[in-house]
Length: 127
Image (cartoon, rainbow, N blue to C red; front, side):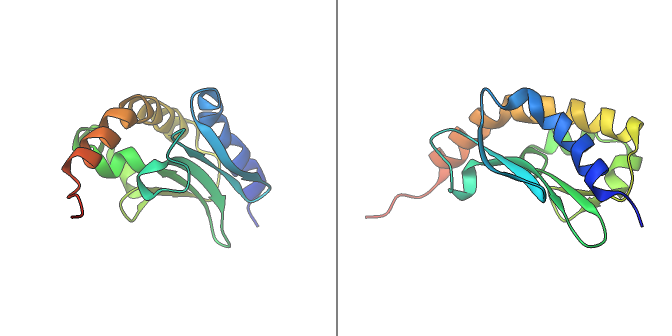
């Protein structure tokens, strides 16, 4: 059986540099969640996170879903790890892919405030 705790800990290291600028809204042995300050609990506030599942460890990065440029910049190897629109699954530590994921996260997290502003501006207002 794979050591999912070690995989999650290594994926969590990718998110550690953003603790100061983002809100850690969930953190425990099963994973962590980072959200934009002021948007905690809102669907558009979720930025990134990790989660240990039964068959793999997931790394979620919402900006991949909302920023087509990030999707186009991914290697075919990393794209193979995608499940859904913003989730990457791993069963073991893969340093080359984790390094690429770290670069992708840095770009995506940097762009997140602008992406949220654009999404909220496009959101229809209720009358």
